[in-house]
Length: 221
Length: 267
Image (cartoon, rainbow over all chains, first blue to last red; front, side):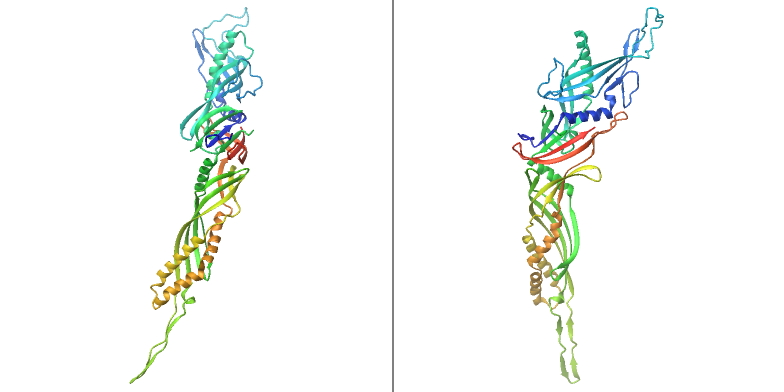
């Protein structure tokens, strides 16, 4: 079978190329990976509002992801945890998430002085938890006009490793899936970057994820 | 496997060729020299259009029936005396009662004339091209399809047409010159015969061959530091990737001949 098949042009970024694109995007814009309520927005971090709770005030926290590593169908990631499985047309992604919480009003021991205020200040030593995350999903295409479009990535499931009990794991997986899905949605790769500017693609078919590639078919505008 | 693979079939390659032809635009040359026994100065401009692509593995792109559209501004100048003998009215003396009266000897020195000719035509040719991939001086990856050899240009019909145009232009210029009415037809014939189709064909070949000799069409040109995303505010700088290597080949292993571009990238 030819590369272009029934269409006239073909663009097929390999998973390694997409990971290079991820590296480029997230290295230039690390704030897409890092979110915190206790620092202002910069190139490195995106500011998010703290959690507000009665009698506590602002609960400051942060969520930091490492640069995700994608693997296109078929699975060659080597170690995707069950029950996740990579179906045809899907990609997997693995990353780490670091959750940061500034715990407030905590007494170190029974003999510590009692809390005397209802508006405690953030502690200076946050609690940090780092988790390994795996997810699976599929690319999503958006076209604006003939020759203009982009690809983003959406997650359908996430698996955390070694979290117990199961209910807590499910809760965290739901939370992390929403957050990581939001991160990946912000990575929008223009068609032009997927064929290194060889031609202006008028997409007619795809992306079809197979053979470790995201395959796009169409014609030249 | 390369980080990025992109391929076009022969239909899409023809579109790329049309784009490359537009990019190449119109080229011009001008010069002067001799055309047979005559002096000539000329300016020529040419552009390419049309043609269909035949991809031939592993590395040939054959462009069939590519049109070389050219326009000539040719001025042929010559001394009329060199082809028409100077004309002299002899001295005539008549005896009169007042003595001999003689007319002066009158000689006509034929002038030099210039014949301007504008001529446009199309020469269709077929040629093979190979790819040249290189990093140019502007740090851009460039893929040129470079012509292999010099194609045969069928110029005889054009030369015949130019010769006819010269004949018509010469007739128009010579007509007002006095005393040579009977010689006009002969002079025009003499001019055109002296130049000759063979001479014009050779001259046209010498003039037009440089347009196709070394002809190259740029089918790919992108900066080595390739822009992925433009800057989008103070906290979202531009995103670029490095194009580390670019290669191009004609592949027919899938049952259809395709032009395949492979690129290795890094963040």
